[in-house]
Length: 468
Ligand code: AMP
Ligand code: ZN
Image (cartoon, rainbow, N blue to C red; front, side, top):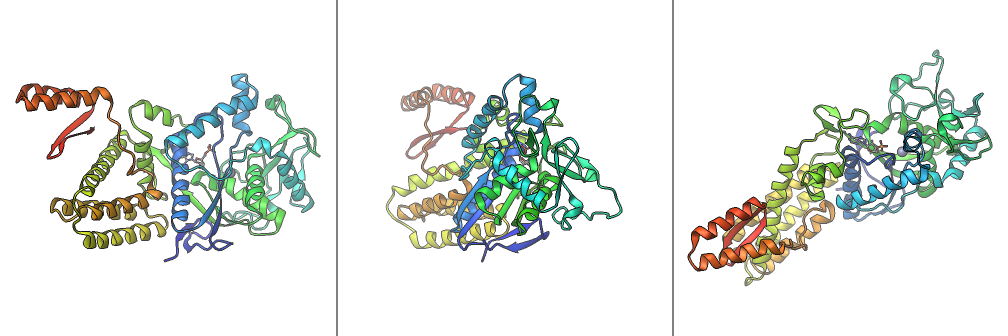
């Protein structure tokens, strides 16, 4: 089956066909680096990670471009409040972003263009829009996009312009649907910008946020490309404005598939900086959760469903991952035994792989993909119990897990957990106590391990210790 996505532009599920067979150009609105990204932002980046990994899994070559918004209303305000030059102020949050995506095992994009390094491209695009007659200069030297001169305006957000209505002008980067208006392409310098300004044919100023993404996406992916993604809050005005600017300048269709993820919510409201109901990744790690657990929690809900963030959710993620880790350990133990059950196990694996792929191809239906994985775990566990999955059969399953993990990025098939020396010493001591039939002492050590967050299980091959 070909892969299918829900396209926000057509509001329907469509078969995905890239412009150039086998290759995908994909643009992702990246972080505005005025603060640490919160895990709501990471839900968006996680969905995009699942998308790129799935496309690669399906054999496509992916070129993903993710911009860093390092000049806009928010970054300028932040740098002025901090009393730092803009570059220095945003550097810290850029570094933090790259650290975070490493912790979350998000695959890096191919290109990370920074807005401040692409001002020439933005100026060029504004000039093209003035030449095309869809932009105009305002009295203060700013340049605005005229939405009434672009008849297709509103195609993504499905807004119909009222030809009778006088169109207002909006200078801010962010505004609501109710205040649909001509938006700033180039903002003439004003007091609030401090020393942030570039020379342009219209005097000193800076780009608007929307033109940044049009300029950087087309610079690295061409005038028309395959996929554009973001959180659903980017749909209007940001993506609507990107389409208007790009298509008015080039006369071509800008993007074929628009994919948007639903929000991460807290107590029924969107997690956001402005509401103050957010957790950064650091906040969550400080509470003892791992990047892998956060990854799982953000990944396991379909991207178009809102996801309610709770710490209980993270604890559940830990339980699921423990179950998978245990499964991997069992398989590794079974793999060193004499061969048994290969044919049946192989068939079971083939079915699981087919169901896993079919789920992903169906608009990234992660629930179906994970159900395929957990069904496999259940069945193979039974086969191991019955001695029907040993040696090369167990190796086969491990191979399948490695394969699925190219998409999931959580399984750690080849990473053995390192047990800290202090814990290993207790395990050894308990073993010695058991040998000496000092069961009271052995139990006391078990309790001590539990208190330290480790569980111990006695197997025919000796004790197995793992994180609780
Ligand atoms: P920003 O840094 O605000 O430009 O946002 C970066 C990305 O995070 C964009 O794709 C937003 O749509 C997305 N985003 C922001 N808040 C949330 C949220 N609560 N849930 C999901 N995505 C979000
Ligand atoms: Zn953008």
